[in-house]
Image (cartoon, rainbow over all chains, first blue to last red; front, side):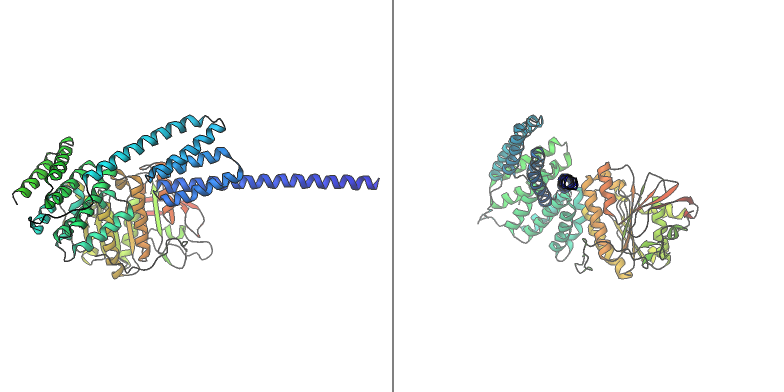
Length: 298
Length: 253
């Protein structure tokens, strides 16, 4: 009898052990799921703050956790988010890779999310195509080198003053106008530029680039000026600020004038004036035409 | 020119609430209300940021004025960033409570960044303690804030700062840009050793953004017109008390 009871006791213990193992495995799984959830939330918050590297770090960790949990739906869900981060970073190839991974998983588990994913891939491919076209066009418009014509001696001081007048079109420029009068204006502009980058004030950043470029032009540092103007144009373009885009084209056009590339002068000024016309901004349009007249009249 | 030789500050380190280093608010009953059980010493922890939020017309700005004015009376300079009212309205509103700013302005004890007056097209003259800026130009606000921080720090390393409020900035700028402005503001003030109060009108941003704003400050207080609630203040338990807006300012009952 005692033996029978002892055997039952062993089975009871074994049963309890099995239950305990099941219990702890369940707890572990729940913890891992909570970890993945937290990582996704951190990733999404970082993405919202445009802190892309952080977002990728968290989301990739979440992807690893879902891998360990063998949770395919979770993996697809996170892959979709990682794709979004790369899309925001304009790293289209990588974005598409992750979207395709998500689509493959959703298809294999027959999730209804696969249709949505398919649409997203198509959309991303269209964006990629648009980026490629824009990049090609941009390269055509702005060659990286600015050779200066030998027989043309521009009055850099006068040109810089003229561009300072053009800057008045941008409301955000008025706050920094006083810096031009400082002994070393570039330091002041650079300091404000650092702040604008820190807080993500795109309009301020681009405006200050135009101002720094104007100082570089006055100092006859044309390659620096060109880079500043082109960077300003890119920022205005990516933030869909049409007026800023048109204003920066006037600066780029002025540099084309210095290099003697009249074809590009005409193209940039025309594009700028057309934009002002679309915006029904008569004042800026007249400033653009004034600048062109001033350039041609020396 | 903004100096780069500011006090080193590690934004990742947790905020220590040293109750022996508190800043008197000047609001009757408030410092006792937020005193800790152990020491019974109250006041806003020095070198922290406090978000005062709540519905409109619940006394958030009055809290700010009272906090600034009390500091000025104790020889603590103040850096005031106003985005809700221009300088004239600010002075007028304070005068309603018999708090007169003019003398302190003449003594250069207060440094005002007025980001609103320019909106009405008024051309304001820049002086050593008054800097006009614009809610549409956040970089300029931050540049002037840097200069202002050094100005008040030189007057006294123990200074106060007010940011009243986020509402108009949110109306003119993308939400996340305003959050970044707020973070940069808090960082600047704390780096220099100041104690900051930020006012925010509830409901002027998306719920998610409101949450992010609340997480940005060290301390969070909510005013609803009747009750003042401590939602977060390290070292202090959550609590609430009734308050009134009187001719002499806020009183916590």
